[in-house]
Length: 163
Image 1 (tube, rainbow, N blue to C red):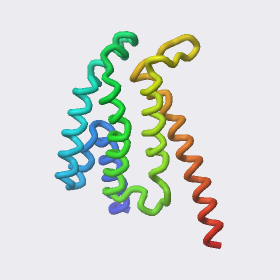
Image 2 (cartoon, rainbow, N blue to C red):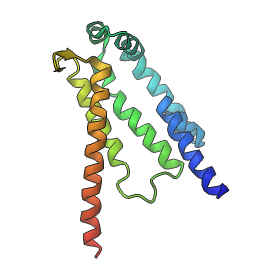
Image 3 (cartoon, rainbow, N blue to C red):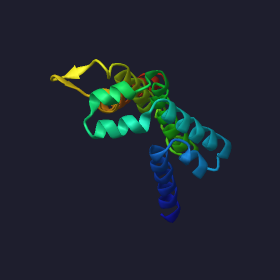
Image 4 (cartoon, helix red, strand yellow):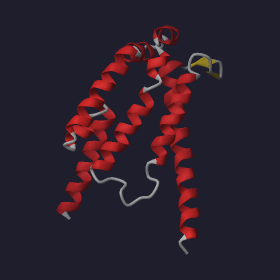
């Protein structure tokens, strides 16, 4: 029981540090070159996209200012970098290895968060403009859900082929 608990704890630790900052999970897994590269890339995209500034503005409900400060050409790299880093660190820690297509929810999350970012300066919901932080966050569960559904469909298709 101790070994299983330790393995699960390691996977969770890596997952949570990857959510905090891309590259940290890779560093915990001993993948130093990849981890340092992802941390540097995250900082570069963060700075060039004005990400921290638009987070602060968005949390203070200054959505128009956040939109004006956003460098969309840089920030559009962030969702794929972020979700890839999470998946890669989790996989390297042994997570999802025995689950076919386990990566699909995160892949579709990256797609939909990017889509939310693309439309964040124009898309309104019930008359409200959500901007470059909140709209992508609202698109996240849609991407997760579609990824889960596609994974289940593929599992059914592939399980029928093996019978």
